[in-house]
Length: 292
Ligand SMILES: [Zn+2]
Image (cartoon, rainbow, N blue to C red; front, side, top):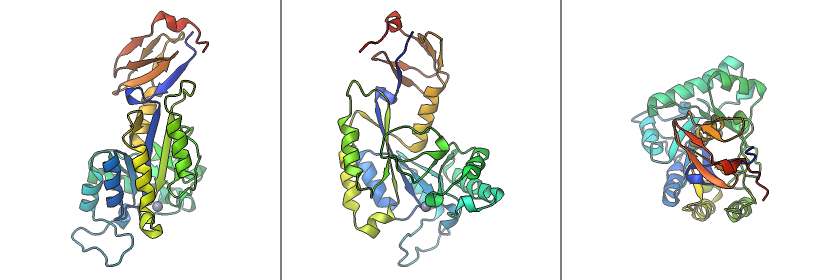
């Protein structure tokens, strides 16, 4: 019986890093520049009701400086980026009647989909507030994941995708200790669970707090590492769902991948790639118990 099966990320990696930044303020431009410089990928959660009218001039001295739709399209269409919903008007979703909460999410989603010409199924809770009723609304709206603001200070994967707790906010005093912990655990043979570092925040906070050096130091430290998979939120979600969708025989030797992406796994300390739409027969040694 194959008793030791662990998900691995694309290329066989054990670690993943994703970013999630909210509200779409103009400071996102500078953050995106840093992400691209260091090879980080991530998701930007937008309130389409706050976008400036096309052709209008930026509002003078506006601390947030929202883009027009076309400016948003240009900014967030770059490689390694994606957009997700954050409510049309940044509402407290848990305070709204269900149909109004649904409209906030669906209309934001539909607007972004029309603008970016792709399905947009991610969400970040405005103000971080939600309830069981809000999660039901998101399910009905076919939202696949929703990010909270509750730090786990860990690298565990979400148990409930509609309650996806991040590792920490960039102002967290343990940010660099967590980054060190995440990196130093790389490739140690006895830590075999896949791990995700999930960072969130608002880019306007770097201007407000005068701490752009924090995110630059983080990006420099975490970026460019061959052992880390850099992904957007929905890339991560889609990959994990593909892994979970693998069809296994009872004895764990035969596995079939019915998804459209290659999926990696470690079985008894060997790495396998199960290619999209194909199957793998693991060698008979897999039947031996891993006693290490
Ligand atoms: Zn927000």
